[in-house]
Length: 475
Length: 119
Image (cartoon, rainbow over all chains, first blue to last red; front, side, top):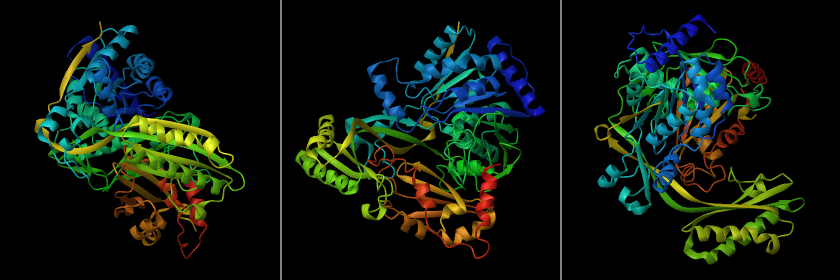
Protein backbone atom coordinates (compact mmCIF):
# COMPACT_ATOMS: atom_id res chain seq x y z
CA UNK A 1 0.00 0.00 0.00
CA UNK A 2 1.57 3.32 -1.03
CA UNK A 3 1.29 6.62 0.75
CA UNK A 4 -1.03 7.93 -1.91
CA UNK A 5 -3.50 5.22 -1.01
CA UNK A 6 -3.42 6.06 2.65
CA UNK A 7 -4.01 9.73 1.94
CA UNK A 8 -6.92 8.93 -0.32
CA UNK A 9 -8.40 6.70 2.30
CA UNK A 10 -8.26 9.41 4.92
CA UNK A 11 -10.11 11.79 2.67
CA UNK A 12 -12.67 9.12 1.80
CA UNK A 13 -13.35 8.72 5.50
CA UNK A 14 -13.68 12.45 5.78
CA UNK A 15 -16.39 12.44 3.08
CA UNK A 16 -18.46 9.88 4.91
CA UNK A 17 -18.05 11.55 8.28
CA UNK A 18 -19.02 14.85 6.78
CA UNK A 19 -22.21 13.47 5.27
CA UNK A 20 -23.35 11.89 8.49
CA UNK A 21 -22.64 14.88 10.66
CA UNK A 22 -24.07 17.33 8.17
CA UNK A 23 -21.21 19.85 8.41
CA UNK A 24 -20.30 21.61 5.24
CA UNK A 25 -16.54 21.24 5.05
CA UNK A 26 -14.51 22.68 2.25
CA UNK A 27 -12.59 19.65 1.08
CA UNK A 28 -9.20 19.46 -0.43
CA UNK A 29 -9.38 17.40 -3.61
CA UNK A 30 -7.74 14.02 -3.14
CA UNK A 31 -4.77 13.00 -5.25
CA UNK A 32 -6.19 9.54 -5.83
CA UNK A 33 -9.29 7.51 -5.09
CA UNK A 34 -9.59 3.80 -4.35
CA UNK A 35 -12.65 2.03 -5.71
CA UNK A 36 -13.39 -1.64 -5.14
CA UNK A 37 -15.66 -3.90 -7.17
CA UNK A 38 -17.87 -5.88 -4.79
CA UNK A 39 -19.96 -7.84 -7.30
CA UNK A 40 -19.95 -8.57 -11.02
CA UNK A 41 -23.49 -9.93 -11.08
CA UNK A 42 -26.41 -10.37 -8.73
CA UNK A 43 -25.54 -13.91 -7.65
CA UNK A 44 -21.84 -13.15 -7.11
CA UNK A 45 -19.88 -14.16 -4.01
CA UNK A 46 -20.32 -11.90 -0.99
CA UNK A 47 -17.23 -12.77 1.11
CA UNK A 48 -14.70 -11.06 -1.23
CA UNK A 49 -16.76 -7.86 -0.94
CA UNK A 50 -16.71 -8.03 2.87
CA UNK A 51 -12.95 -8.50 2.65
CA UNK A 52 -12.70 -5.38 0.47
CA UNK A 53 -14.87 -3.41 2.88
CA UNK A 54 -12.72 -4.40 5.87
CA UNK A 55 -9.21 -4.50 4.42
CA UNK A 56 -9.36 -2.77 1.04
CA UNK A 57 -8.49 0.70 2.30
CA UNK A 58 -11.22 1.90 -0.04
CA UNK A 59 -13.09 5.12 -0.61
CA UNK A 60 -15.91 3.48 -2.58
CA UNK A 61 -17.27 -0.01 -3.01
CA UNK A 62 -19.38 -0.60 -6.13
CA UNK A 63 -21.75 -3.51 -6.68
CA UNK A 64 -22.84 -4.19 -10.27
CA UNK A 65 -25.75 -6.59 -9.99
CA UNK A 66 -28.12 -5.89 -12.86
CA UNK A 67 -28.15 -8.16 -15.90
CA UNK A 68 -30.05 -7.31 -19.07
CA UNK A 69 -33.30 -9.03 -18.24
CA UNK A 70 -33.25 -8.69 -14.44
CA UNK A 71 -35.31 -5.50 -14.52
CA UNK A 72 -38.08 -7.16 -16.52
CA UNK A 73 -38.22 -10.01 -14.00
CA UNK A 74 -38.16 -7.53 -11.11
CA UNK A 75 -40.89 -5.46 -12.76
CA UNK A 76 -43.17 -8.49 -12.62
CA UNK A 77 -42.41 -8.88 -8.90
CA UNK A 78 -43.23 -5.22 -8.38
CA UNK A 79 -46.62 -5.63 -10.06
CA UNK A 80 -47.41 -8.40 -7.58
CA UNK A 81 -46.01 -6.56 -4.54
CA UNK A 82 -45.50 -2.79 -4.39
CA UNK A 83 -42.53 -3.18 -1.99
CA UNK A 84 -40.70 -5.67 -4.21
CA UNK A 85 -38.82 -5.30 -7.49
CA UNK A 86 -35.24 -4.85 -6.29
CA UNK A 87 -32.32 -7.26 -6.25
CA UNK A 88 -33.13 -10.55 -4.48
CA UNK A 89 -29.74 -10.59 -2.70
CA UNK A 90 -29.83 -6.95 -1.55
CA UNK A 91 -30.66 -7.83 2.04
CA UNK A 92 -28.04 -10.56 2.35
CA UNK A 93 -25.36 -8.49 0.63
CA UNK A 94 -25.92 -5.20 2.44
CA UNK A 95 -26.38 -6.91 5.80
CA UNK A 96 -22.86 -8.27 5.31
CA UNK A 97 -21.10 -5.13 4.03
CA UNK A 98 -22.90 -2.08 5.44
CA UNK A 99 -21.30 -2.06 8.86
CA UNK A 100 -17.71 -2.70 7.74
CA UNK A 101 -18.17 -0.03 5.06
CA UNK A 102 -19.39 2.55 7.55
CA UNK A 103 -16.61 1.63 9.97
CA UNK A 104 -14.00 2.09 7.24
CA UNK A 105 -15.59 5.21 5.75
CA UNK A 106 -16.43 3.51 2.46
CA UNK A 107 -19.36 4.77 0.42
CA UNK A 108 -21.45 2.25 -1.51
CA UNK A 109 -22.82 2.57 -5.04
CA UNK A 110 -24.97 -0.17 -6.57
CA UNK A 111 -27.62 -0.82 -9.19
CA UNK A 112 -29.35 -3.30 -6.86
CA UNK A 113 -32.46 -1.09 -7.08
CA UNK A 114 -33.40 -2.93 -10.30
CA UNK A 115 -37.06 -2.10 -11.06
CA UNK A 116 -37.66 -0.35 -7.72
CA UNK A 117 -34.75 1.73 -6.40
CA UNK A 118 -36.98 3.57 -3.92
CA UNK A 119 -38.12 0.34 -2.26
CA UNK A 120 -34.48 -0.79 -2.28
CA UNK A 121 -33.41 2.43 -0.53
CA UNK A 122 -36.14 1.94 2.11
CA UNK A 123 -34.98 -1.62 2.66
CA UNK A 124 -31.37 -0.43 2.92
CA UNK A 125 -32.34 2.15 5.54
CA UNK A 126 -34.23 -0.56 7.44
CA UNK A 127 -31.18 -2.85 7.41
CA UNK A 128 -28.95 0.06 8.50
CA UNK A 129 -31.33 0.93 11.34
CA UNK A 130 -31.20 -2.69 12.47
CA UNK A 131 -27.41 -2.42 12.55
CA UNK A 132 -27.59 0.79 14.56
CA UNK A 133 -26.13 2.94 11.78
CA UNK A 134 -27.86 6.17 12.73
CA UNK A 135 -27.55 9.13 10.40
CA UNK A 136 -26.70 6.99 7.38
CA UNK A 137 -27.93 8.65 4.21
CA UNK A 138 -29.28 6.49 1.42
CA UNK A 139 -30.13 7.94 -2.00
CA UNK A 140 -32.20 6.16 -4.63
CA UNK A 141 -31.66 7.18 -8.26
CA UNK A 142 -34.86 6.66 -10.22
CA UNK A 143 -36.36 7.90 -13.46
CA UNK A 144 -34.83 5.24 -15.69
CA UNK A 145 -38.24 3.59 -16.07
CA UNK A 146 -39.57 4.97 -19.38
CA UNK A 147 -42.18 2.30 -20.12
CA UNK A 148 -45.10 4.73 -20.45
CA UNK A 149 -43.03 7.00 -22.66
CA UNK A 150 -41.82 4.38 -25.11
CA UNK A 151 -45.28 2.78 -25.28
CA UNK A 152 -46.72 6.12 -26.36
CA UNK A 153 -44.07 6.54 -29.04
CA UNK A 154 -43.96 3.11 -30.58
CA UNK A 155 -40.31 3.31 -31.61
CA UNK A 156 -38.56 0.93 -33.95
CA UNK A 157 -36.79 -2.00 -32.27
CA UNK A 158 -33.05 -2.24 -32.96
CA UNK A 159 -31.55 -5.32 -34.59
CA UNK A 160 -34.96 -6.90 -35.08
CA UNK A 161 -37.93 -6.38 -37.31
CA UNK A 162 -40.98 -4.59 -35.99
CA UNK A 163 -41.92 -1.82 -33.58
CA UNK A 164 -42.61 -1.84 -29.86
CA UNK A 165 -46.39 -1.83 -30.06
CA UNK A 166 -46.19 -5.03 -32.05
CA UNK A 167 -45.33 -6.60 -28.70
CA UNK A 168 -48.69 -5.50 -27.24
CA UNK A 169 -49.39 -6.90 -23.78
CA UNK A 170 -46.15 -8.85 -23.85
CA UNK A 171 -44.18 -5.63 -23.22
CA UNK A 172 -43.08 -5.76 -19.56
CA UNK A 173 -40.46 -3.08 -18.98
CA UNK A 174 -38.49 -0.28 -20.61
CA UNK A 175 -35.53 1.26 -18.83
CA UNK A 176 -33.18 3.90 -20.14
CA UNK A 177 -29.47 3.53 -19.37
CA UNK A 178 -28.70 6.54 -17.16
CA UNK A 179 -25.18 7.94 -16.87
CA UNK A 180 -23.05 9.13 -13.96
CA UNK A 181 -24.79 12.47 -13.36
CA UNK A 182 -27.60 11.51 -10.94
CA UNK A 183 -25.15 9.40 -8.90
CA UNK A 184 -22.78 12.38 -8.65
CA UNK A 185 -25.70 14.50 -7.46
CA UNK A 186 -26.44 11.90 -4.77
CA UNK A 187 -22.80 11.89 -3.65
CA UNK A 188 -22.75 15.69 -3.55
CA UNK A 189 -25.85 15.50 -1.36
CA UNK A 190 -23.88 13.41 1.09
CA UNK A 191 -25.18 9.92 0.30
CA UNK A 192 -23.36 7.11 2.05
CA UNK A 193 -25.19 4.56 -0.09
CA UNK A 194 -26.46 5.22 -3.62
CA UNK A 195 -28.91 2.69 -5.05
CA UNK A 196 -29.89 2.92 -8.71
CA UNK A 197 -31.99 1.10 -11.23
CA UNK A 198 -30.70 0.85 -14.80
CA UNK A 199 -27.45 2.78 -15.14
CA UNK A 200 -24.67 2.00 -17.62
CA UNK A 201 -22.33 -0.28 -15.67
CA UNK A 202 -19.15 1.85 -16.08
CA UNK A 203 -21.07 4.94 -14.91
CA UNK A 204 -21.35 3.39 -11.43
CA UNK A 205 -17.54 3.67 -11.21
CA UNK A 206 -17.16 6.91 -13.15
CA UNK A 207 -19.51 8.79 -10.80
CA UNK A 208 -17.24 8.80 -7.72
CA UNK A 209 -14.32 9.95 -9.89
CA UNK A 210 -16.30 12.84 -11.34
CA UNK A 211 -17.49 13.72 -7.85
CA UNK A 212 -14.12 13.53 -6.09
CA UNK A 213 -12.03 15.12 -8.83
CA UNK A 214 -14.71 17.50 -10.06
CA UNK A 215 -14.26 16.44 -13.67
CA UNK A 216 -16.26 18.53 -16.14
CA UNK A 217 -19.19 16.93 -17.96
CA UNK A 218 -17.46 17.56 -21.28
CA UNK A 219 -13.95 16.49 -20.27
CA UNK A 220 -14.27 13.62 -22.72
CA UNK A 221 -10.75 12.26 -22.32
CA UNK A 222 -10.99 11.96 -18.53
CA UNK A 223 -14.53 10.60 -18.77
CA UNK A 224 -13.22 8.04 -21.27
CA UNK A 225 -10.41 7.01 -18.91
CA UNK A 226 -12.79 6.71 -15.97
CA UNK A 227 -15.09 4.66 -18.19
CA UNK A 228 -12.28 2.25 -18.94
CA UNK A 229 -11.64 1.87 -15.21
CA UNK A 230 -15.34 1.13 -14.77
CA UNK A 231 -15.38 -1.31 -17.67
CA UNK A 232 -12.42 -3.20 -16.18
CA UNK A 233 -14.03 -3.41 -12.74
CA UNK A 234 -17.69 -3.92 -13.57
CA UNK A 235 -17.39 -7.73 -13.70
CA UNK A 236 -15.46 -7.80 -10.41
CA UNK A 237 -13.46 -11.10 -10.35
CA UNK A 238 -13.21 -11.22 -14.14
CA UNK A 239 -10.22 -8.86 -14.06
CA UNK A 240 -8.53 -10.47 -11.04
CA UNK A 241 -8.15 -14.00 -12.39
CA UNK A 242 -11.73 -15.19 -12.80
CA UNK A 243 -12.89 -16.31 -16.28
CA UNK A 244 -9.20 -16.68 -17.10
CA UNK A 245 -7.63 -19.88 -15.76
CA UNK A 246 -6.58 -22.43 -18.38
CA UNK A 247 -4.30 -24.95 -16.64
CA UNK A 248 -0.85 -25.23 -18.17
CA UNK A 249 -1.39 -22.14 -20.30
CA UNK A 250 -2.81 -19.55 -17.95
CA UNK A 251 -2.46 -20.69 -14.36
CA UNK A 252 -4.16 -18.82 -11.55
CA UNK A 253 -3.21 -19.34 -7.93
CA UNK A 254 -5.91 -20.28 -5.41
CA UNK A 255 -8.87 -19.62 -7.66
CA UNK A 256 -11.30 -20.65 -4.90
CA UNK A 257 -10.10 -17.66 -2.84
CA UNK A 258 -10.31 -15.15 -5.67
CA UNK A 259 -9.88 -11.58 -4.45
CA UNK A 260 -11.99 -8.86 -6.03
CA UNK A 261 -10.27 -5.92 -7.74
CA UNK A 262 -9.43 -2.42 -6.60
CA UNK A 263 -8.69 0.55 -8.86
CA UNK A 264 -6.64 3.41 -7.52
CA UNK A 265 -7.35 6.31 -9.85
CA UNK A 266 -5.61 9.68 -10.09
CA UNK A 267 -7.21 13.00 -10.87
CA UNK A 268 -6.10 12.65 -14.48
CA UNK A 269 -7.70 9.25 -14.87
CA UNK A 270 -4.57 7.12 -14.80
CA UNK A 271 -5.14 4.03 -12.70
CA UNK A 272 -3.62 1.02 -11.03
CA UNK A 273 -5.59 -2.19 -10.79
CA UNK A 274 -4.74 -4.41 -7.82
CA UNK A 275 -6.29 -6.63 -5.17
CA UNK A 276 -5.78 -7.27 -1.47
CA UNK A 277 -2.43 -8.89 -0.84
CA UNK A 278 -2.71 -12.55 0.01
CA UNK A 279 -6.03 -13.17 -1.72
CA UNK A 280 -6.22 -15.72 -4.53
CA UNK A 281 -6.37 -14.90 -8.23
CA UNK A 282 -4.15 -12.99 -10.62
CA UNK A 283 -3.92 -9.45 -11.93
CA UNK A 284 -1.62 -9.17 -14.90
CA UNK A 285 -1.40 -7.36 -18.20
CA UNK A 286 -3.12 -10.41 -19.72
CA UNK A 287 -6.11 -10.41 -17.33
CA UNK A 288 -6.57 -6.66 -17.86
CA UNK A 289 -6.35 -6.79 -21.66
CA UNK A 290 -8.83 -9.68 -21.74
CA UNK A 291 -11.27 -7.80 -19.56
CA UNK A 292 -10.91 -4.58 -21.55
CA UNK A 293 -11.91 -6.49 -24.67
CA UNK A 294 -14.80 -8.25 -22.92
CA UNK A 295 -18.12 -7.24 -24.50
CA UNK A 296 -16.29 -4.65 -26.59
CA UNK A 297 -16.91 -4.10 -30.28
CA UNK A 298 -15.00 -1.17 -31.82
CA UNK A 299 -12.13 -0.42 -29.37
CA UNK A 300 -12.16 3.18 -30.62
CA UNK A 301 -15.84 3.79 -29.86
CA UNK A 302 -17.32 2.33 -26.68
CA UNK A 303 -20.70 3.98 -26.20
CA UNK A 304 -22.04 4.91 -22.78
CA UNK A 305 -24.46 7.67 -21.75
CA UNK A 306 -21.43 9.65 -20.50
CA UNK A 307 -18.96 9.52 -23.37
CA UNK A 308 -17.91 7.66 -26.49
CA UNK A 309 -14.83 6.15 -24.92
CA UNK A 310 -11.75 5.37 -26.96
CA UNK A 311 -9.79 2.37 -25.66
CA UNK A 312 -7.68 2.01 -28.81
CA UNK A 313 -4.66 3.74 -27.24
CA UNK A 314 -4.98 2.03 -23.85
CA UNK A 315 -1.75 0.81 -22.34
CA UNK A 316 -1.25 -1.73 -19.58
CA UNK A 317 2.03 -2.20 -17.72
CA UNK A 318 2.88 -4.67 -15.01
CA UNK A 319 3.60 -2.64 -11.88
CA UNK A 320 4.40 -5.38 -9.40
CA UNK A 321 2.81 -8.62 -8.27
CA UNK A 322 -0.93 -8.50 -9.01
CA UNK A 323 -0.69 -4.83 -9.91
CA UNK A 324 -1.12 -3.31 -13.38
CA UNK A 325 -0.99 0.34 -14.33
CA UNK A 326 -3.32 1.68 -16.95
CA UNK A 327 -3.11 4.75 -19.16
CA UNK A 328 -3.81 6.05 -22.63
CA UNK A 329 -7.59 5.83 -23.00
CA UNK A 330 -9.56 8.83 -24.21
CA UNK A 331 -12.99 9.83 -25.32
CA UNK A 332 -15.24 11.87 -27.55
CA UNK A 333 -18.52 13.73 -27.08
CA UNK A 334 -21.28 11.61 -25.54
CA UNK A 335 -24.12 10.27 -27.72
CA UNK A 336 -27.27 12.38 -28.03
CA UNK A 337 -29.63 9.44 -27.54
CA UNK A 338 -29.90 7.03 -24.62
CA UNK A 339 -30.28 3.31 -25.07
CA UNK A 340 -33.43 1.81 -23.65
CA UNK A 341 -33.58 -1.85 -22.72
CA UNK A 342 -37.04 -3.28 -23.35
CA UNK A 343 -38.13 -6.53 -21.72
CA UNK A 344 -40.99 -8.58 -23.14
CA UNK A 345 -42.57 -11.95 -22.48
CA UNK A 346 -41.51 -14.40 -25.14
CA UNK A 347 -43.22 -17.70 -24.43
CA UNK A 348 -41.86 -20.56 -22.36
CA UNK A 349 -38.71 -22.57 -22.70
CA UNK A 350 -38.42 -26.23 -21.80
CA UNK A 351 -35.15 -28.03 -21.18
CA UNK A 352 -35.09 -31.81 -20.75
CA UNK A 353 -31.95 -33.96 -20.54
CA UNK A 354 -31.08 -37.66 -20.30
CA UNK A 355 -27.73 -39.50 -20.25
CA UNK A 356 -26.41 -42.52 -22.17
CA UNK A 357 -23.05 -44.16 -21.52
CA UNK A 358 -20.83 -47.00 -22.65
CA UNK A 359 -20.81 -48.77 -26.00
CA UNK A 360 -23.21 -47.23 -28.50
CA UNK A 361 -23.90 -44.19 -26.31
CA UNK A 362 -23.74 -41.83 -29.27
CA UNK A 363 -26.20 -43.86 -31.35
CA UNK A 364 -28.64 -44.25 -28.46
CA UNK A 365 -28.43 -40.56 -27.63
CA UNK A 366 -29.13 -39.73 -31.27
CA UNK A 367 -32.09 -42.16 -31.26
CA UNK A 368 -33.46 -40.49 -28.12
CA UNK A 369 -33.38 -37.11 -29.88
CA UNK A 370 -35.15 -38.60 -32.91
CA UNK A 371 -37.87 -40.12 -30.73
CA UNK A 372 -38.60 -36.83 -28.96
CA UNK A 373 -38.46 -34.91 -32.25
CA UNK A 374 -41.14 -37.22 -33.62
CA UNK A 375 -43.26 -37.12 -30.47
CA UNK A 376 -43.40 -33.35 -30.06
CA UNK A 377 -44.70 -32.95 -33.62
CA UNK A 378 -48.02 -33.85 -32.00
CA UNK A 379 -47.98 -30.52 -30.16
CA UNK A 380 -48.32 -28.75 -33.52
CA UNK A 381 -47.82 -24.99 -33.47
CA UNK A 382 -47.64 -24.93 -29.66
CA UNK A 383 -43.92 -25.52 -30.19
CA UNK A 384 -42.41 -22.42 -31.79
CA UNK A 385 -38.78 -23.52 -31.97
CA UNK A 386 -36.82 -26.55 -30.81
CA UNK A 387 -33.25 -27.66 -30.48
CA UNK A 388 -31.69 -31.13 -30.17
CA UNK A 389 -28.21 -31.37 -28.67
CA UNK A 390 -25.85 -34.08 -27.60
CA UNK A 391 -23.97 -32.58 -24.68
CA UNK A 392 -20.34 -33.66 -24.85
CA UNK A 393 -20.60 -33.85 -28.62
CA UNK A 394 -22.13 -30.85 -30.33
CA UNK A 395 -24.19 -28.81 -27.86
CA UNK A 396 -21.78 -25.87 -28.05
CA UNK A 397 -19.82 -26.28 -31.26
CA UNK A 398 -22.73 -27.51 -33.41
CA UNK A 399 -20.31 -29.80 -35.24
CA UNK A 400 -21.72 -33.01 -36.77
CA UNK A 401 -21.85 -35.79 -34.11
CA UNK A 402 -19.72 -38.39 -35.90
CA UNK A 403 -16.91 -35.90 -36.48
CA UNK A 404 -16.88 -34.61 -32.95
CA UNK A 405 -17.28 -37.59 -30.64
CA UNK A 406 -14.56 -39.60 -28.96
CA UNK A 407 -16.01 -39.95 -25.46
CA UNK A 408 -17.73 -42.64 -23.45
CA UNK A 409 -20.97 -40.90 -22.53
CA UNK A 410 -23.38 -38.36 -23.95
CA UNK A 411 -26.26 -36.36 -22.59
CA UNK A 412 -29.18 -35.81 -24.93
CA UNK A 413 -30.84 -32.41 -24.52
CA UNK A 414 -34.09 -31.23 -25.98
CA UNK A 415 -34.94 -27.54 -25.60
CA UNK A 416 -38.08 -25.96 -26.99
CA UNK A 417 -39.75 -22.57 -27.04
CA UNK A 418 -43.50 -22.97 -26.62
CA UNK A 419 -46.54 -20.72 -26.46
CA UNK A 420 -47.64 -21.95 -23.03
CA UNK A 421 -46.34 -23.43 -19.80
CA UNK A 422 -48.44 -26.51 -20.44
CA UNK A 423 -46.76 -27.13 -23.79
CA UNK A 424 -43.29 -26.71 -22.25
CA UNK A 425 -44.20 -29.31 -19.66
CA UNK A 426 -45.51 -31.64 -22.39
CA UNK A 427 -42.13 -31.47 -24.16
CA UNK A 428 -40.34 -32.23 -20.89
CA UNK A 429 -42.63 -35.19 -20.23
CA UNK A 430 -41.60 -36.62 -23.59
CA UNK A 431 -38.01 -36.53 -22.41
CA UNK A 432 -38.93 -38.16 -19.11
CA UNK A 433 -40.93 -40.83 -20.96
CA UNK A 434 -37.64 -41.95 -22.57
CA UNK A 435 -36.98 -43.81 -19.29
CA UNK A 436 -39.49 -46.52 -20.18
CA UNK A 437 -40.15 -45.86 -23.87
CA UNK A 438 -36.81 -44.78 -25.29
CA UNK A 439 -33.44 -46.34 -26.17
CA UNK A 440 -31.72 -48.76 -23.78
CA UNK A 441 -29.99 -47.50 -20.68
CA UNK A 442 -31.15 -43.90 -20.49
CA UNK A 443 -30.63 -42.39 -17.05
CA UNK A 444 -30.57 -39.20 -15.01
CA UNK A 445 -33.45 -37.22 -16.52
CA UNK A 446 -33.60 -33.58 -15.46
CA UNK A 447 -36.16 -31.09 -16.74
CA UNK A 448 -36.99 -27.44 -16.25
CA UNK A 449 -39.45 -25.00 -17.78
CA UNK A 450 -39.56 -21.27 -17.43
CA UNK A 451 -41.13 -18.22 -18.93
CA UNK A 452 -38.77 -16.34 -21.21
CA UNK A 453 -38.16 -12.63 -20.85
CA UNK A 454 -36.54 -11.41 -24.03
CA UNK A 455 -34.72 -8.09 -24.34
CA UNK A 456 -34.74 -5.65 -27.23
CA UNK A 457 -33.20 -2.18 -27.50
CA UNK A 458 -34.65 1.13 -28.61
CA UNK A 459 -33.21 4.64 -28.43
CA UNK A 460 -34.71 7.73 -26.84
CA UNK A 461 -33.53 11.34 -26.83
CA UNK A 462 -31.72 12.30 -23.64
CA UNK A 463 -33.99 15.23 -22.75
CA UNK A 464 -37.02 12.93 -22.48
CA UNK A 465 -35.46 11.00 -19.59
CA UNK A 466 -35.65 12.69 -16.17
CA UNK A 467 -33.51 11.09 -13.47
CA UNK A 468 -34.47 11.98 -9.90
CA UNK A 469 -33.31 11.28 -6.34
CA UNK A 470 -35.20 9.92 -3.35
CA UNK A 471 -33.61 10.13 0.11
CA UNK A 472 -33.81 7.96 3.19
CA UNK A 473 -32.00 8.96 6.38
CA UNK A 474 -31.58 6.35 9.09
CA UNK A 475 -32.91 7.53 12.45
CA UNK B 1 -0.09 -26.00 -34.02
CA UNK B 2 -3.14 -24.83 -32.15
CA UNK B 3 -3.85 -21.14 -31.74
CA UNK B 4 -3.79 -21.56 -27.94
CA UNK B 5 -0.02 -22.12 -28.09
CA UNK B 6 0.55 -18.45 -28.84
CA UNK B 7 -2.64 -16.65 -27.86
CA UNK B 8 -5.31 -16.35 -25.21
CA UNK B 9 -8.87 -15.25 -25.73
CA UNK B 10 -12.00 -13.84 -24.13
CA UNK B 11 -15.59 -13.92 -25.32
CA UNK B 12 -18.29 -11.39 -24.52
CA UNK B 13 -21.89 -11.02 -25.63
CA UNK B 14 -24.23 -8.12 -26.38
CA UNK B 15 -27.63 -9.17 -27.65
CA UNK B 16 -27.20 -11.48 -30.64
CA UNK B 17 -23.61 -10.30 -31.19
CA UNK B 18 -20.60 -12.12 -29.82
CA UNK B 19 -17.10 -10.71 -29.61
CA UNK B 20 -14.01 -12.86 -29.39
CA UNK B 21 -10.75 -11.16 -28.50
CA UNK B 22 -7.59 -13.04 -29.48
CA UNK B 23 -4.50 -11.77 -27.66
CA UNK B 24 -0.89 -12.79 -28.32
CA UNK B 25 0.94 -13.96 -25.20
CA UNK B 26 4.05 -12.50 -26.76
CA UNK B 27 3.65 -9.32 -28.78
CA UNK B 28 6.22 -10.60 -31.27
CA UNK B 29 3.57 -13.06 -32.46
CA UNK B 30 1.04 -10.37 -33.30
CA UNK B 31 1.91 -10.09 -37.00
CA UNK B 32 1.70 -13.86 -37.31
CA UNK B 33 -1.73 -13.80 -35.68
CA UNK B 34 -2.81 -10.96 -37.93
CA UNK B 35 -1.79 -12.91 -41.01
CA UNK B 36 -3.27 -16.25 -39.98
CA UNK B 37 -6.34 -15.44 -37.91
CA UNK B 38 -8.47 -13.64 -40.42
CA UNK B 39 -12.22 -13.02 -40.40
CA UNK B 40 -12.50 -15.68 -43.10
CA UNK B 41 -10.71 -18.27 -40.96
CA UNK B 42 -12.92 -17.46 -37.95
CA UNK B 43 -16.05 -17.66 -40.11
CA UNK B 44 -14.99 -21.04 -41.39
CA UNK B 45 -14.01 -22.37 -37.97
CA UNK B 46 -17.33 -21.34 -36.39
CA UNK B 47 -19.33 -22.01 -39.53
CA UNK B 48 -21.89 -24.19 -37.72
CA UNK B 49 -22.88 -21.31 -35.49
CA UNK B 50 -22.56 -18.06 -37.43
CA UNK B 51 -25.43 -16.50 -39.31
CA UNK B 52 -24.03 -13.00 -39.84
CA UNK B 53 -20.85 -11.20 -40.80
CA UNK B 54 -17.55 -11.15 -38.92
CA UNK B 55 -15.72 -7.85 -38.41
CA UNK B 56 -12.11 -7.72 -37.20
CA UNK B 57 -10.58 -4.86 -35.21
CA UNK B 58 -6.80 -4.73 -34.93
CA UNK B 59 -4.99 -3.53 -31.80
CA UNK B 60 -1.26 -3.83 -32.54
CA UNK B 61 -0.18 -2.02 -29.36
CA UNK B 62 -1.87 -4.69 -27.27
CA UNK B 63 -1.03 -7.53 -29.62
CA UNK B 64 -4.74 -8.21 -29.92
CA UNK B 65 -7.41 -8.83 -32.52
CA UNK B 66 -11.07 -8.33 -31.70
CA UNK B 67 -13.63 -10.23 -33.76
CA UNK B 68 -17.22 -9.05 -33.70
CA UNK B 69 -19.56 -11.84 -34.81
CA UNK B 70 -22.99 -10.61 -35.78
CA UNK B 71 -26.01 -12.88 -35.37
CA UNK B 72 -23.87 -15.54 -33.76
CA UNK B 73 -25.84 -16.30 -30.61
CA UNK B 74 -29.11 -17.80 -31.86
CA UNK B 75 -31.01 -14.67 -30.82
CA UNK B 76 -28.88 -13.75 -27.81
CA UNK B 77 -28.81 -14.81 -24.19
CA UNK B 78 -32.40 -13.87 -23.47
CA UNK B 79 -33.87 -15.82 -26.43
CA UNK B 80 -31.45 -18.57 -27.43
CA UNK B 81 -32.27 -22.23 -26.81
CA UNK B 82 -28.55 -23.04 -26.77
CA UNK B 83 -26.97 -24.65 -23.71
CA UNK B 84 -24.32 -21.92 -23.70
CA UNK B 85 -26.65 -19.06 -24.53
CA UNK B 86 -23.97 -16.40 -23.86
CA UNK B 87 -21.54 -18.08 -26.24
CA UNK B 88 -18.95 -18.07 -23.44
CA UNK B 89 -17.40 -21.28 -24.76
CA UNK B 90 -16.67 -19.80 -28.18
CA UNK B 91 -13.27 -18.34 -27.26
CA UNK B 92 -12.01 -21.80 -26.31
CA UNK B 93 -13.45 -23.24 -29.53
CA UNK B 94 -11.43 -20.67 -31.48
CA UNK B 95 -8.24 -21.40 -29.51
CA UNK B 96 -8.49 -24.98 -30.79
CA UNK B 97 -8.06 -23.74 -34.34
CA UNK B 98 -5.00 -25.06 -36.21
CA UNK B 99 -2.61 -22.42 -37.53
CA UNK B 100 0.84 -22.77 -39.15
CA UNK B 101 3.74 -22.31 -36.76
CA UNK B 102 6.01 -19.30 -37.21
CA UNK B 103 9.04 -20.14 -39.25
CA UNK B 104 11.64 -19.79 -36.45
CA UNK B 105 11.69 -21.33 -32.99
CA UNK B 106 8.23 -22.76 -32.54
CA UNK B 107 8.35 -23.61 -28.86
CA UNK B 108 9.59 -20.31 -27.55
CA UNK B 109 6.26 -18.46 -27.44
CA UNK B 110 4.60 -21.05 -25.22
CA UNK B 111 7.37 -20.87 -22.66
CA UNK B 112 7.07 -17.10 -22.68
CA UNK B 113 3.33 -17.43 -22.28
CA UNK B 114 3.65 -19.60 -19.21
CA UNK B 115 6.13 -17.30 -17.63
CA UNK B 116 3.92 -14.30 -18.25
CA UNK B 117 0.80 -15.95 -16.88
CA UNK B 118 2.53 -17.17 -13.76
CA UNK B 119 3.91 -13.82 -12.71
